[in-house]
Amino acid sequence: MGCSRIVTNFAYGENMNHKKNVADIIGMKKKGDKITMLTAYDASFAHMLEQSGVDMILVGDSLGMVVLGYDSTVPVTMADMLHHSKAVRRGASQTLVVGDMPFLSYQVSIDQAIANAGRFMKEAGCDAVKLEGGQDMVGTVKAIVTAGIPVMGHIGLTPQTAGQLGGYKVQGKDVESARKLLADARSLDDAGAFAVVLECIPDKLAQVISEEISVPTIGIGAGSGCDGQVLVTHDLLGMSGKFIPSFVKCYTQLAPQIKASLDNFQDDVRSGNYPDAEHSFSMKYEVEEVLGRSSE
Image 1 (tube, helix red, strand yellow):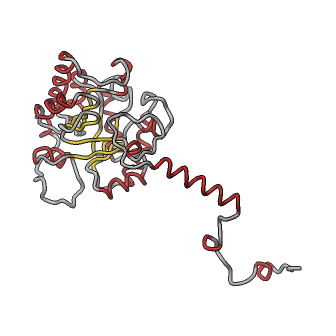
Image 2 (image 1 turned 90 degrees about the horizontal axis):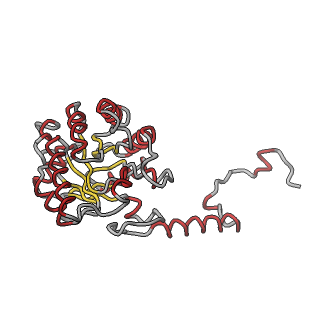
Image 3 (image 1 turned 45 degrees about the vertical axis):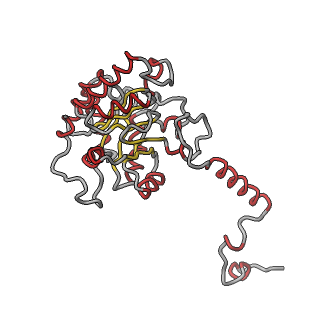
C-alpha cells in the first residue's frame, strides 16, 4: 500500500522516547494497540494532551465553532489553521500533530492542495495533514503523498460538505452508501493515506472497513471496532456549553465549575475580599515614608 512511500527504516517499539511519527501509528494497528487522538487549538491544551500521552493531536477546523464562534467549519481559513497549528506545535513538541486542511484549501486544484499542505509542514511544523473526501480525492491524496507529506483521510460525515449529505446525519446506513464508504476507504488506503477518520457511520460498517484496509481507522461516532478514537477535547471535558453529539462521552463537566469560579472572583472583587494580604506585595517601609508624604 501507499503508506510504505511515506515511512521506512523504523522498527516500531525500538525507542519509545522518540517523537512519534506515522510509522508508529501504522505500527500500532499491526500490534493491535488502540490509538488515541484529541483536538487542540492552543499551546496550553496541546501541552496537557502531550503530558497525558495522547498518540496524535488534531488541530481541527472544528476550531471554527469551538474557538472562533462560527456556525460551521466552512468559514475557517488557511490563516486561521496555520496560526493555531503553530501554537499547538509550540505546546507539544513530541506528539504527532495533524493539521486539518480547511474548506477550499485543497478542492480547487491539486497544485494548490500540495502548496497548502506544504504550508502546514513548513510554516506550522505539522507532521501530517487531514482532508475530507473519498474516491473523489484520490488524485489529490496521491499528489500530496508523492510530495512527501503524510495524509490522513476522512470519510462518512464530512462537516465541510455536510449540506450535500443532508445535514449532520449518520452515513452509510443503506447498502449502496455502505458499499461506497468501503470503496472510499479502500481508495484512500491505495492512494497512500496513513490513516482514515470514520465519522458518524454504523459500528458494524466501521468494523468491516477497519478489517478491510491496511492503515488505521480513527473513529468518531463509529463504534469500538475502529483502530482508534478521536474527540473534540472541549466536548469530552464538558466545556462547549452547546449541543453535544450523542457519541461523545463527557468525562467531566468543566463549564459549571468554570462559571462558579468566575462568579466567585467577581463576588470577591466587589466585596473587597480580593486581593487580600496573601495575594498582595508588602514593603519594608510605610508608603508615606518612602514618598516623603505626611500621614497627617
